[in-house]
Image (cartoon, rainbow, N blue to C red; front, side, top):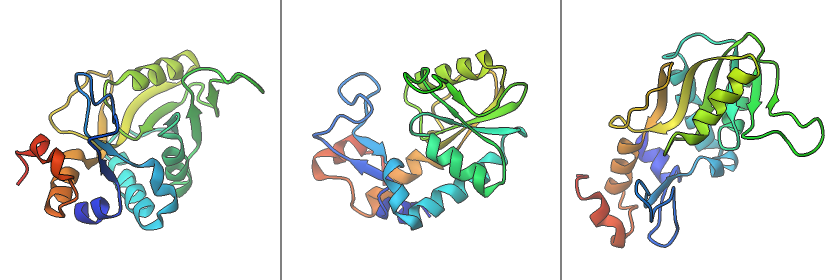
Length: 189
């Protein structure tokens, strides 16, 4: 699974680009590239199947909420696959149209939030506040990729569908990490 996902481009490495604030504390020389997988059907199916499995480790919910922007497409596809309601949770109200911050009915409903991955947790905390302020009840968080060693104190459980560490290890075995970055990943066998 992990070697196929790495080979299909779920993870990207770059010494030149700033991925997740690379030049700041906590910055990364890699990116879990889930946005580009919309046109890669094989990778999209892998991610959706992994998200489906991950969802079942979380509390039961009424609505799957996509954290805009990266989590939106995944939550929509997942909710469609599982025949569940979907809501789009925006960082701020739209500047035009109906000026909504939540697109979908979450009032009084249990919501599992979906996002691609988490660096600082800021966008997740904003989404949690938005769900609560619109009458929803956040009960879980599902990330496409995450790290076992990173823990956040949310008031509900969270899970990730794909281990970032195992994805990096698979990329290393496939020699996908650029030479100038290999020192960043010396612990990988």
